[in-house]
Image (cartoon, rainbow, N blue to C red; front, side, top):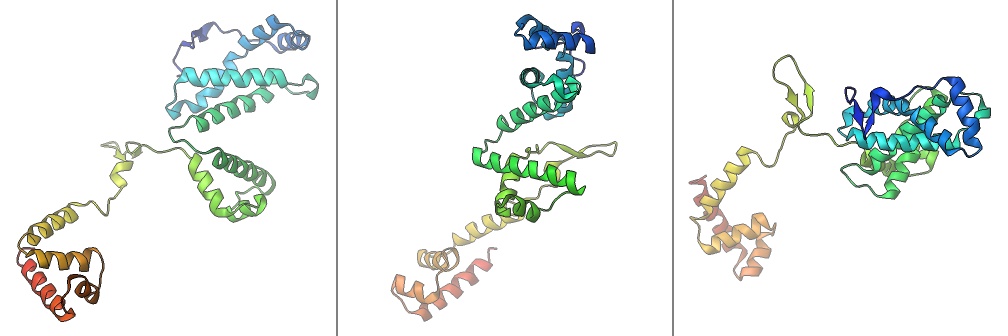
Length: 256
């Protein structure tokens, strides 16, 4: 992004830079409804938008999209800026542009999140910022829940919902050789080679049983029924179920 000369059809190398005096003069005209002065002011602050969106260059978003969203934030800042507050326009505009970009990233992310979750998350983030400004430390989830009168479980779910997903191919360590990726650190405890082999062995061993023995083992170990329940279902005694079960397991051990 930083090396791009043209963005959204705008040649960034030719963008003008306004002096403070020029900005003040243009704002006087803008407040009187001069649309030409407004357009000049917008063009004179596009470099400010570029500098802000560079903070988000590692998010994988299209720079053109971020630039357009940043321009919306710039326009909102122009329309709402009060010259009587005694601060530079850029001081007021930068948070507006950042806020617009962050809102876009959250709303247009790859994972769709409900509006209620987003609202809860934004409330929690604002409360967190206020707490940090007051106490110079981050609040715990319990403290946030107390401040907002919201169950802490809801806050955790909401904050997790707006967090950015991480690619399995995201590098997490590089020692000069091959990089280690997130997927290298993720362990599957269910679909392992050992489990697959055991499953294959069991299936092969089951082929050597009678249909009644297969049925008993299915009821006992896959459906979780007791020997008495199995006996009632297939119409034999519990002792017979026990004998057939032991015989079937003994037979299977020869092939597993």
